[in-house]
Amino acid sequence: MQTLLVGLDAACLPVLRPLFEDDEIPHLQSIFEEGATGPLESQIPPWTASAWPSLYTGTNPGKHGVFDFLRFDGYDWDIVNATDVRRRTLWEYLDEAGLSSVVVNAPVTSPPPEIDGAIVPGYLASENPQCRPEGILADVREAIGDYRVYARRETDERAGDEKFDDYLELTEMRGEAFRYLAEEFDPDFGFVQFQKTDAVFHDFPGDLEKVRQVYRRVDEQVGKILDEQDPDTVVVASDHGMGEYDGHEFRVNQFFREAGVVETTTEGQGVPSWFQIKDEQLTDDGHGDESSELLERLATTAANFGLTYQRGKAVLERLGLAEFVGKHVPVSAVFAASDAVDFRTSKAYLRSPSELGVRLNVEGRDPDGVIPHSEYESTREEIISLLTTATTPEGTPVFESVVPREEYIHGPYADEAVDILAIPTDFQHSLSALVGEQFGDPEPWNHKLEGVVAATGEGISADADLEGAHLFDVAPTVLASLGVAPDEEMDGEALSAVESPDPKSYPDYEPATQESTEDGDVAQRLSDLGYLE
Image 1 (spheres, rainbow, N blue to C red):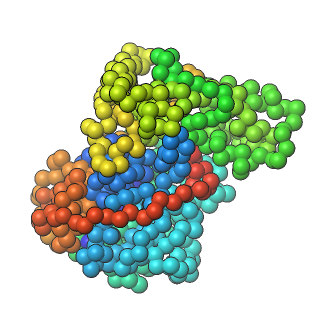
Image 2: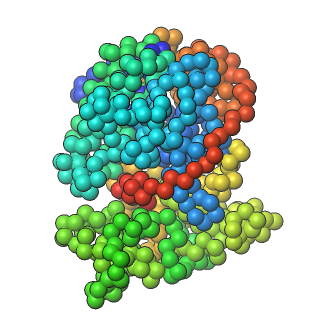
Image 3: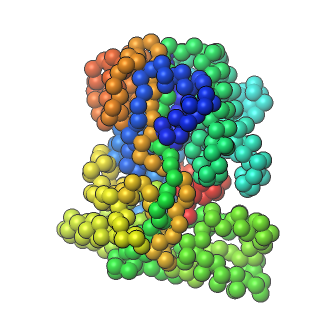
């Protein structure tokens, strides 16, 4: 193996340093100590589903086309998949250069392209994803005993030790599957991604011992991969950082409603939500019983105050009410009686919190647009000015920056993105699409802008200064380590630690035809991590 890329979701120096100091993760520590390393600035927005495609294409979301966990078609939505990534990936560049790859657990890679090597997709794939070559998943399962993309549903429903043990088992599966495939295919390039280094913060916030256990298990797998494959070059990179949030959850659509920008409706839930899929999974065919009306009123009140499924399910389970509520109260009926954003009549709205921005409802672009195209820029300036006035209950600005999307997102697919990006102050506040009260409590741990990168081995200058390293630089750096010229259309450039061929022009890329995900189980898991409200 010439180059190994290890992806650590949400890794950053504030998380890694204490582990290094306590000698908890010796294999990762040796990579950082022996090579060039530094902070890695993520993109805006710094969320998994968009950031990983940016890392492995070297382009901003406006060029590759994935902006969020969700894809929007007008006011309707679906969960993104690999057919939404409309740029060459690292393994496609290498395949065209005659080099082989093994890719395990990379997010947003299902369905995968045909390449010389193997791909087992990761996050946002189904539990039994299509892999390359066909049938290889069965071979992996036979070889290592089992392989799953996600935690078992029966354990994922609980937040205790059994669920966490499954996290550790999944981490082992990533390493075992990668080592098996690397042995079988002898690739030039290997990419293995570990997702639970992120999920542990969402599911077990503040439990730093569990964080240490996850990283120890990751380090064990990295050590075994290094021993068996002995790659010439190793790159470690993350998609974003992680840290505590001590601010507020700011409900942008409620702020807009009070300003006359958002209109609401009781004709059903418009904003993407776990509640849109809950009825299909839990409710009976009947219409409930005499308790339904009371429970609906209670749920409506809770929703107005920001009690989402993710926050409330543990309480319901402890009280033994989760199954009862699911079977007797169709949640669509609950939300039909509560206010939700009316996409069609609103001027602008937050459609998904992890897009980190606001979409305008424009004539000729959006199905029922209300803003004339001639007024687009003036309206956008008005909305930007309005958002800059948002302050917390303590009187401090909610946002450190509110800008047109072009500040960060540009390319052929930029028009599919939000029109305005709103960056919370110090990433201490989270955004919500709910209406009701304007402020709530944020998730205690969430994404930060600064991730991390390290590179060591053949052709790497260990004393190189990586100041200013950006997420978009990872793909050209990996290509350079393999002697492949980066694409001149990439938004990043090879890090100074590696000598790179001059960028070159590549033929136009022909993306796959977009396919629908239509996987309720994936939507459920997005809700579990707080990505669907």
